[in-house]
Image 1 (cartoon, one colour):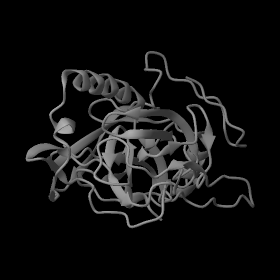
Image 2 (cartoon, helix red, strand yellow):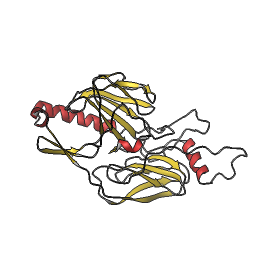
Image 3 (spheres, one colour):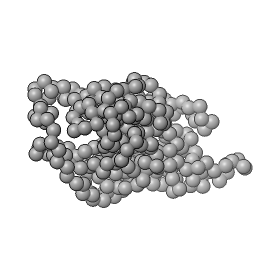
Image 4 (cartoon, one colour):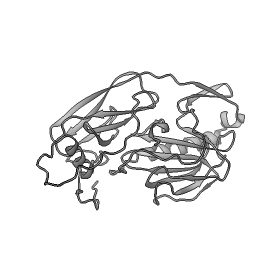
Length: 304
């Protein structure tokens, strides 16, 4: 993979020999900011202004949350992965270069580790995950949506395999701000992380936030990005996936219509569809999932 940008500080960066093509690549612009933030560019040209630091999500190092992990002194172009090898988003804060890590809802409290590769070699960076208990939610839905027929089961399995590939998307550049816009008007529910019980049958925790809203209300992109998938899925209904860069993805579900197509570039606040009640729902609303290094995390942590 190579990446070229029109930024005056950009250059083409290629993976080192023997490294996977989908390893995370840090844009030169972000590396410069990290060096400036840590004072490493003391010899920078006179009059060169200190750039502002990126806006990061709120740090909450719990299952379903986000950890902002300082990486210390960096040499060259760093590449950071989780314990299972998933690329991690890199940015900067006042401490210098940081990893912005999505923590899966299934994560156990305790110590977790990242693997950092840079010009100094390979080392691990530890961070702590604190416990968090989420509520339980009981819902009544049509029995045929819980007790799937063989045909529906086969459809779900095909769709799950496809969307697992969509979640692996990792593009090298992100927007300067990692704060997101709420994609439709309404009250953002506190349903993220709740363990769902459908007709008395436990299911996986709710991996997004719901926004009750009338059918037809506009749904917009939470940030600049690229549409990477659209479709009508058994559980999620009409769905749009948007890549915001470096493994930060938005999934917008249950839409009454889809106004974009895969490959389309979208701007923050641009309409991508409309609220609906397609898929497995009890009424019209928007389901919004935010994924970071393939982990579903609390969208509320990214709101301005």
